[in-house]
Amino acid sequence: MKTPTLRRLAGPALLLAALLAAPFGAADAADPACPDAELFSGKLITDVCWACLFPIRIAGMPLFGGTAPAGAASAPFCACNDGLGVPHPGFTVGMWEPARLIELVHAPRCAPALGGIRLPLGSRRLLGTAGQAEYDASDTSFYNFHWYAFPLLILLDLFWDDRCNPDGYVDLDLLYLSELDPTWNHDELAFFTNPEAAWLANPVALAACLADAAAATAGTPIDALFWCAGTWGNLYPFTGRGPTVGSRARETSLASARSLAALHRRGLSRRTMGNDALCGSPMAPFLPKSQYKLSMFYPLPETQRAHVIGESPFTWGEWRNIPAVGEDHLYLLWRWNDCCATF
Picture 1 (tube, rainbow, N blue to C red):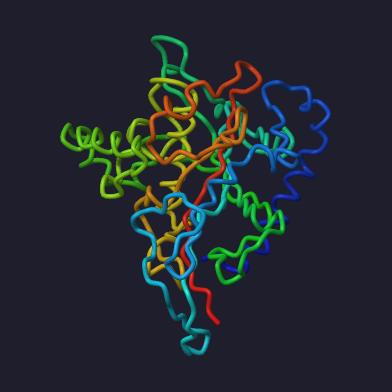
Picture 2 (cartoon, rainbow, N blue to C red):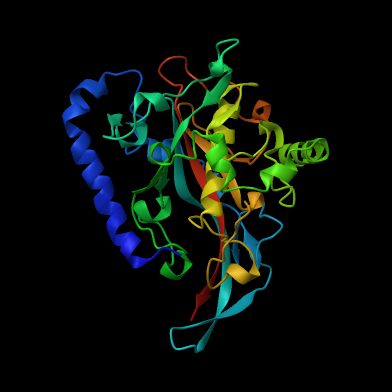
């Protein structure tokens, strides 16, 4: 769970970055390489898949339809200890919550979620590519990612119990920038954070991803195949470089999944699903894929449904790209959250 120190620093750090970038705002506003996603506008209502909140489980009873992950908490009642170790009984609550915003950009420092400003960090060597050239290094795609806390239910002042807020975020916070992470654009450095990639790079492990691809397209990714991202490709290495096969929707989705896996490995994302997550968020060094789903927010939003990790983009987003002005992408990350609402 997030420490109070980090919680106090996250908001001021975001404000400071925006203020430092302010002198560049006038020029960047008309810069097509750094578009404005118009995050804080009417799009918060019109471009969000509100049906993706469901089902809501209260005391084990699902409400309003929808599908819960197989690993969700099944017990109707629970008890959590307070600071003195005294148990307090309650009932379980589980739902899909919009918890994070993942921003994938070609141009380093560009922040479409913050109005298209340029943050004062990074360098031109981190310039991304969609991998459309031939016979050179740009055959592989590369995206920088920015990770935001985005507790939308709290931002819009909708119902949410403080006891069901596992990491304590209550506003938009800039949590992580790949421009400051040397492992994101260097496969060899990334290997030291995920050494298991050495024994996963074999034909048998890669062939097993076919099963995950089929399962993910059916809506149920296989958590045991933690190295697979379904039809998107391999989760390893945890870098922004990936093969160019298919659309930008596929490429940016794979980069999103890899960034999520990297943050789980660093302990910056945790498991919020299951009976043992009702009173806290245990560490999850391997990505629990079934805990998450994604919906594109920009450039062309998914408003009717969200897609699971590895689901074929032919079912949800092969066409979600606007040349030149819509090649950067924002995804809303939905997280299944089980908690114990104590009396």
